[in-house]
Length: 94
Image (cartoon, rainbow, N blue to C red; front, side):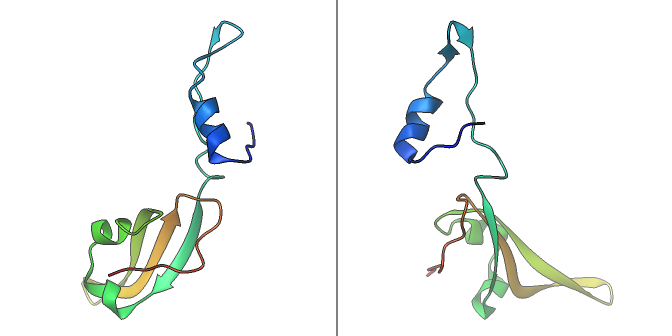
């Protein structure tokens, strides 16, 4: 594992295919390069997961659903997985 200081370094490292004539594969670490946040908004209740995932920096969205009798009802709370080690301080949508 290699820790880099900039995106430029990551791009250069990602372009490497051999190291001392040994073939290598360079890929970002899956869990260390992401973060999770929780947001609440009444406006998100009617949005699909795909619509929420279109927000800038969001890699995955999982709405929280509650069970009422036999139906699952979507709440206004969504878990967001961001493609950065720290979640953003704010989200802008619409």
